[in-house]
Image (cartoon, rainbow, N blue to C red; front, top):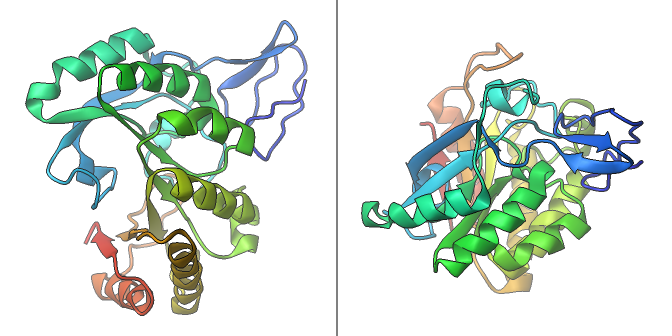
Amino acid sequence: MRCQVCFHGCDLEEGQTGLCRARTNIGGRIVCTSYGKVTALALDPVSKKPLAQFHPGMNVLSAGSFGCNLSCPFCQNHEISMADESFPAKQASPEELAALAKRLVPQRNIGIAFTYNEPLIGWEFVRDTAALIHKEGLLNILVTNGTASPQVLEQILPYVDAMNIDLKTFDETIYRRVLGGDLQMTLDFIRRSAAACHVELTTLIVPGISDSVEQMRREAAWIHDLEISLGKTIPLHVTRYFPAYRMEAEALPVRTIRQLAAAAREQLSAVYLGNC
């Protein structure tokens, strides 16, 4: 059986699990083994997702599971994103999460954010939970690497109110060889999502991967063109990396992050600094 969730298109024998560690061939069907398995749950500021222009000052119930379909050596949440179903998790149904989100409204909660790991490898749980969140009159946020297939994206878009999408680098070779990703798929995902809901982007500034001023200018030009075509602002978060997972290179000086943000501001009106 071939998994259709992302660009990897994993061909899975009976009992075999895909690269994401969360989808398995069971009985001739590709099953989401992370469904309802929550490894992280917290009430976070919306600004931490990060979203700067979506309900500022409010909070959101943030839920994560395990697994990811990329292999970024600098992953900031590698404990769960690189884990599999053996990682300790609590079982929570969509109904339970929706009820919890509703109870947290007095604490300035606007809804739920699917975050921490890559949510769309378990898109069925996102869809089912997000539908109930909307029934409660609340909002859904998706924090994603933007590499799900168009078919998956169309399944969840009706329920998503805002996204933060990682645009990890504007170099196709690095995306493919270092991150195990697909830049064009990510750009297509951003374009479709931004047409349907509020979208903000994050570029983590990692030494040797995303720290080129020329690359940042090309990225900003692409975002600017998209803003013009859609008639809307797409904020960009330029965020400072810290050593994590398999990457030990020191974080770049804050002045370097500011220089890259300044390069982006040559073409973009909404650029924010993170981890500085």
